[in-house]
Amino acid sequence: MTSSKTRIAVIGGGSWGTAFALHAVAAGLQATLVVRDRETASRVDDERENGRYLPGVSLPVALAVSGDAVAAVAAADVVVLAVPSRAFRAVCVTIAPAVTAEATVLSLAKGLEPGTGERLSLVAANTLAIAASRVAVLSGPNHAEEIARGTPAATVIAAADPALARHLQRLLSTRAVRAYASTDVVGVELCAASKNVIAVAAGISDGLGLGDNAKAALITRGLAEMGRLGASFGADPRTFAGLAGLGDLVATCCSSHSRNRRAGELLAEGVAPGAVEGRIGMVAEGLVTAPVLARVAAEAGIELPITEQVCAVIAGEPARGSVAALMARDAAAEY
Image (cartoon, rainbow, N blue to C red; front, side):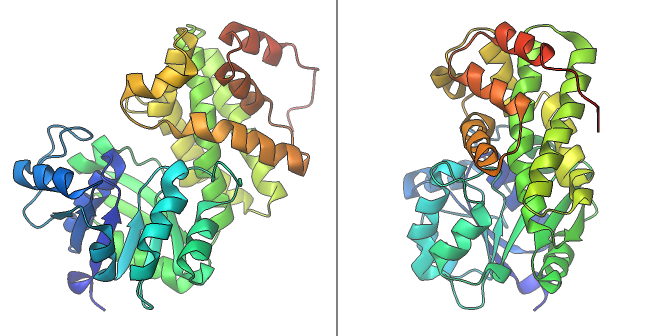
């Protein structure tokens, strides 16, 4: 199979799905962006712009737009899932009958399934009734707004089958995006989920005006939390120092593009947790993932103090009280 003939269906018309579909076109793939419904598809196709999620970015003629997920998946060699964690299983159920025996599935989602705490690659494999070795995950410091503009970036693609990881690496590498291959699916997915929660904490710190020292400490100790979580699930510790770990953590905690950081700012300003996503206009996965991650960690006997305090703020506790609780913890060795 050559990249010029590879057909890729990107399920999810948000900012990241749209940007990834643009990247797929730049990589020479035959790409289809699948949006919510036919009416939305018609509007986006006519305007050649996804004005709600990625305004000001023109969609090339080579990018097809569809509101029919089943038809797009049936024709695809690579099925890309760029949907929120809370909709992930439902989308998989919808497209399952159309996934061909030869197709590869690539998850761009950054979270855990809210109800079960399961990693989304496993949800995909089980729901689509395919081998887990055919499901890959992609993560890293890849803000949609910058990927869409073609500015330099790097990402990591993980698959249990190293040949699949390398295949997707070749397929999706361009002069603008350097892709790295990995076999640590567990580590990449846990990084992708947990970094969003730490970014909410960083946003709370920013919203309270706590300064650079506090934010740097949150990022550093947040990385330590991520590493503890990964170690307990058998992840490669190097993943947490890599693009999916430290790289994405820094970007998500510091960027003006970060929805999760913005969610934390709004919480610090006193916006009700239930109203935060409405104010942002997009999903902030950290708000959904924090309680799931805390539950998974508690069941495994892992302490995640920052995550626990983010959960407290989401539950309505004052943000400054959570900061005080973190600062009052018993003294401990750094490592």
